[in-house]
Amino acid sequence: MSSNGNAKHVKVLVLGSGPTGYSAALYAARAELKPVVLTGMQLGGQAALTYTIENYPGFPEGVGGAQLGELFQKQAEHFGAVTEFDMANSVDLSKRPFKVTTDNGEYLADALIIGTGASPTHLNVPGEVELTGRGVSYCATCDGWFFKDKKVVVVGGGDSALEEALFITRYASSVTIVHRRDELRAGAILQKRAKEHPKINFIWNTVVTEVLGTEKLEALKLRNVKTGEETILETDGLFIFIGHIPNTQMFKGQLEMSDLGYIKVNEKMETSVPGVFAAGEAADPHFRQVVTSAGMGAAAAIQATRFLEAESE
Image 1 (cartoon, rainbow, N blue to C red):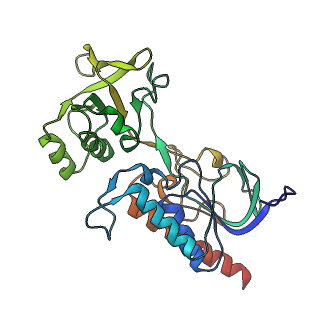
Image 2 (tube, one colour):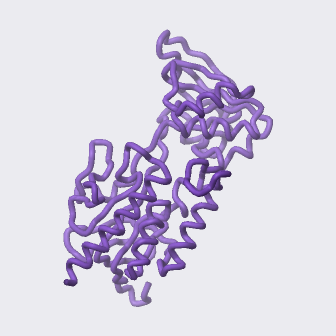
Image 3 (cartoon, rainbow, N blue to C red):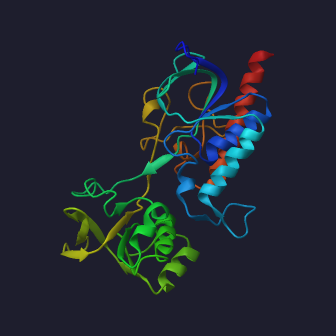
């Protein structure tokens, strides 16, 4: 940022440093648009919090999430992308160049690519917030190590819940998966692995209604959704994987969105405002994979390039 507080003018500003943001930055950089990437809170996005990514092409043995994020960053920067450890707080999309206000100043962008991703959904039950970081977690790869030889509960039934549950078995003495239905949504391979794992057991048709503990998590209050019966389950850890909410709050009222808060885009990643593109989990409630987010990011940058070229003709 310039010291006199003036806004910094860039051709392409990318919000988010996950697979979406850095794929967009790579393509924009190769088009010599000198993109600037604002990292947001989590460098590398959600993917960086995943211990091993087994389904990204080109890594037959799997690749660490943080490592993949570093490779994305390095490749984009190799072609001229610039990373700023900064976070956008508000945007003005009413006129171009678009104004983006960050923790450290202001940017004016001729084109904007939104790759702000999504954040984990909370249970919203008593005790959850108070005991977050003291037994309650949303990231197994960040916190699994703290639960060596301890009893852990995982809430959820999708791919991420089972991936994280399987990861935690490296450390925990037992992992109990609590799911509100009587069958899982996760893919077949993950289901098979989890069901065959000696450390994993399941509690079906059940929800957590309260997180109990004073200094740290001690137990959970559970309720069977079919019978209404309540039980107390003692545990050392609670990992919550019940979905995600798109990080799109600052675009409300400026871009068209779905009821769930995902930014609406067409097949060219164009939003309702010309020159603003959105990709990855901020715009994708369906696939939510590293590879699809990367692909959407690339598409957004290709389209942004065409948009800027059409103007200069």
